[in-house]
Image (cartoon, rainbow, N blue to C red):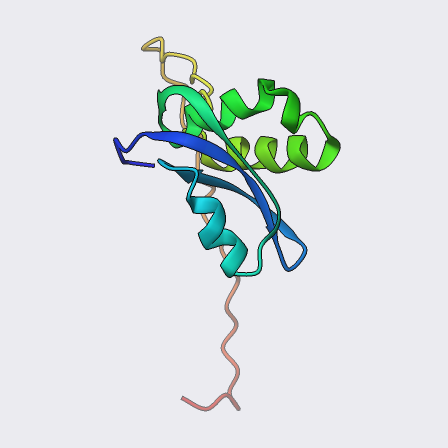
Length: 121
């Protein structure tokens, strides 16, 4: 979400059984969603201008979004769009300057060779 856009209206809507979080700067967005066959359109004006992630967090606290569908839709949006923090890497133990002796490589065993008169060269 590398954008600085802010929104004053946010909410959720249902399109073909799939709920999504919606953002706008005007409540007239309801008409556009309704014309596009959205149902259960719930948009509210926020008390300021917020980024999408901030607006979604704000929606979680509003009374109109306390039902299970709204809470799960908004929570899923927040989880999917929150900045990912890299997991801390396990640190390797520091070398102490002491080297382990290398294992000796065994020389191959000598094989007794017999000369056969019938052996081809």
